[in-house]
Structures are given as structure tokens and as C-alpha cells.
Length: 446
Image (cartoon, rainbow, N blue to C red; front, side, top):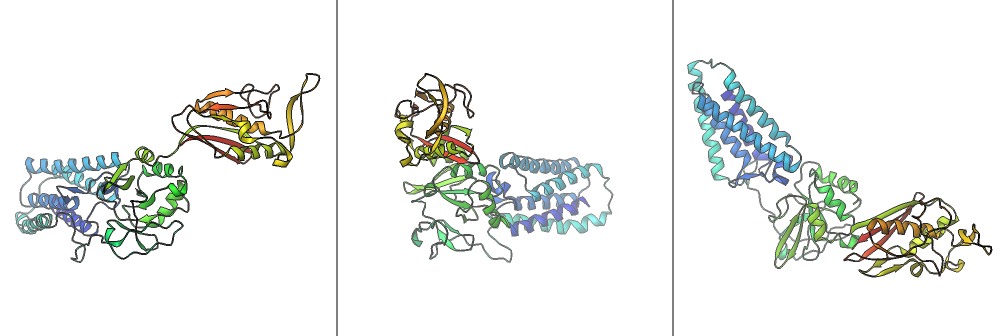
């Protein structure tokens, strides 16, 4: 009975190979772990040969230690492959682990169950078992890369075809058909060729546990600087899931393309590919991809409350005046120079400011531009978080509600200023976000 089950497993492996010749159904093995082939032979056929051989030696021969050792070694080897794929890819093929479980149980039952069977049954079943073993070996030899598809037709490799530009938010640069070495398609089936001489391409898989990190790095780039997004190692239904995957990682509405597999130069996902010096270059992993794309790095940030009052309007106006400012290495940024005079003609309104009256007393009085200090305080905290050098800084004489004593920044045109020096080796960009009653300032390394 054990031998018959091995033969059925061999037939199942051949059937799975017919429908998925290039790797496992989940993509875990064939994608990131790169376990599609051994000696240029697909694993499905290696498995079919082993199971057929196991059935051929189990059926005609009485129970013996050599056969038991072979069955156990095969089960352990398969389990090792599954474990390696899981540690690398972070996921496990549901078909593969069922095969390895069945193999382990059969190897165990071979030792446990008694060897009771009619002598004639061994000889009758031995012939088909050997025939299946010969067929499996023949398939392994004549079709080393699994190019025979179901129905007996050979699978054609992608070829360059006359192309038309896809109707997407950002149309790709389309290379001439004669130069197209890697065609892709859009979600609606339009065939295009991405010209990676003009822009790199990021390849990711929906099932890949490491790809979200790379996608989130892409969100830090301006839209015109982002690479092509290509979904690869596709399984059933993943072309539709890709849109949700992009949205989950901050790329909602981003154009993307489909490819069954990445270029041969790519060894896994996520991978960034670009054309350089007459050939295709690749890097893998979110960190390497971010470095190659020159993704800005967050140096420091701070967030303070900005309740909806007249002061909030002044704070947001001042924030808009410094938002997007790029400070070069060694340059000193001046808040007063960037914001300028706080006057009604420039859009500022009457808020409240901490001032010293003619009697030398400190009091809070109505003042055009009152509330601007919220913006300067958020900038101060972001600069301190980034560890940069403060050149000029003043604190209020009275406590403020949006910062602890000594951690606020009082500014007054044209006297009190907030200045810091960019001590980084690269330019730093000031990014301001005002929403939900909060003011947030970020410093990004360009």
C-alpha cells in the first residue's frame, strides 16, 4: 500500500509540473527563495522521479533497512528545502508542505506497519511502478526547464511586439520594438515596453513579506522621480490584489505593470533594475533600493498642538512660507528672513503675543502675527531632534501651552530670530504638515 501511495505522489508531481512548470504555486519557493530548479531541472520532476523510484523499490521488495533509509532521507531532504524557503521568503507553499508531510508519514509507516502482502501482488504492481519510474526519468532528461505545457505545446518566451502606450496616469517611455528586451502589460492587458534607460523599474510580489518596506521608500520620492512599479511572480487573482497592496503602502492610484517574472539578472524581490553601460543592473532589498534611488531620509521631526484660533492662521501662514525650503550643507537658515514681516498686507491677522510693556512687565496682548511662534517652536524641536547646531534661539518669558518651558522658540520681527546651521553633508528640506489641529515639521535629507 505504501508503494502505491508513492506512485500516486509521483503522478501528482507530474500533474503539478504540467500546470506550474517554473516553480511552486505560492511563489515562495520560485520567487524570493529561488528554489525553482536543481541542475536546471524543475523540482516537480525531481520529486516525481524520487516518488516513482520509492514506489518501484517498495512494491517488489520485502521490507529492508536500505529502502527505509532512502525513504527517510528523501523526506528529510524535502523538509529541509521547505524550511529554507520559509526562512528566506517568510511564507510556505501550501502544496509543498502537504507533499513533505505525506512523505514523512509514508517513511514512518514503512518502519511501523507490518509487511503483509500476497507474493503475486508484488510482482503485478512492480511492472507499472518501474514503467512510471522510467517515464519520470525520461521527462527529467528531455525537458530540463519545464517548457512543455499541458496539452503538449511548448511555452514561448516573451518576444518584442509592436507596442502602444498604456492609458495610465503616467505613461511609460516606450522603447522601439527592436530594443524591447523585457515586455510587460498593464492591468487592462495592454502590452508595453518600459524603457529602463530613462527610469528604473521596481519589481515586487504581492505575497513577498519584504516588499512593503521598498514600496514605502518609494512614497518618499516626488512622483516624477519614482521608478516604474512592476508586479511579478503572479498567482491567480494577484493582478487585482496588487492595487490594494500599493494603496496599503501609500501608493494609491500609482500606475503599475504586470510581468510573470523579473529579468534574469534579478535574483528575487524586491529588486530595482536599471540600464547602465549597455546592460541591466540590479540591487535587492529595501535599503539598497532606497540608496540607489537616493530616497530622502528623515533626520528629525516634531509635532505640536495648533488649536483653531487666530494664532493658528498665522502659524499656518508662516509654515507655508518655510515649507519646501532647502538648506544647503553649512548654510544657516533664518526664520525671520524666510517668513518676513508679519503685517496685515501680507495676510497675517491679529492674534496674541507675549510682550514687555512700557513698565517692564511681561503680558499677553493682541498682536498682528501672534501665533507665529508655534511654527518656530515646532521647527526648533525638529532641529533639535535632528541634532543640528542652533545659531540663535530665544524662549518666551511666560509659559506657553504648546511646549515645555525652555523648549519653545520666541521670534519677533526684526529682532528675535530662530537660526540653525545645516551640519549634514547633504541638503536638508523642511516639510510642514498642518492637519487635525496639529502642526508637524520634518527635516528630510535630500
